[in-house]
Length: 392
Image (cartoon, rainbow, N blue to C red):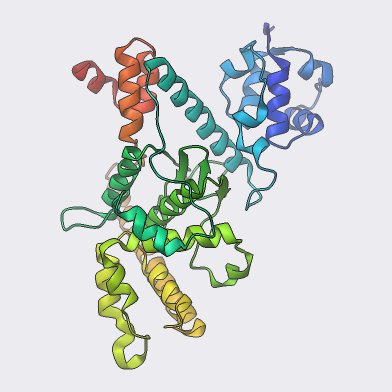
């Protein structure tokens, strides 16, 4: 018979409320696969649980078993989670999205705790703007302080994203990239989130063809940081069907993100003439801007549509054509993978997330000061035990 362990029931209640569940929902979830010996309220909310039941509960919340065992109370819910601070988010979050935001908030709490213990602090160096401020003007001003990343002959768009993450780190902003594995049951229906005062979450795009979208998401959440407006959301500026659904804050962040990412090509883009068959829809100039910035072609054509230089009908046609090209590339990549497998090659491709150098620097200070163990250091930095042993 399994031994029961004591848990902090208030912490379980906190998670239920934060995830917008109910006690009945949790009971039904725990009893779902039980044909007999159904659990009742006292079994689950009496303050003592079998370890197997606690582990199943944590499959929902992903809080880590230590969270439930911690006897300390949660005194200020609003200070701990955006779910209590913000009454309505821009998307109805899936369970996977809630898990990812909560995971990010726990990481953020750890980082802020380490800042305090190591005597470090992150002072905001950029002003807080308002949606009354011109997003294009703000983009140009901010670009002189935090240089937008641009594609160079020696790097890829994935490299551009890494550079962007670390430039934001230098500006005092933590960035956490999460990965939704293909076999993960609960998928996150968000692309990014901003947690005040200086923490951004972005979803890793497993499809390398969509890396520009992740770069745009990061720039969009950077816009939320500049406005100091928390959010967790899907980010797809180029969807004309959702134009009327975006609120003023989202439009502002989209406009900021696009013009910020143009970087030194701002004037080239703004001087483009209306797109017609006579000028080949400016394809050569657009290709040049696409190849040198973190922006996608969809974003470029969409913003030309917003400027009145491309009709909505023609933009929709171009977008469909770009989608077809993308699908062809996906099919080609899938076919090549199948051919590699058929030839007997062992294919192991585990996506690796980007680790912010700002996080790594803080973790290194904490590790060398004896504040965290090697396993936590590895978790925060992504370094292998081998590398840690050789370097530290």
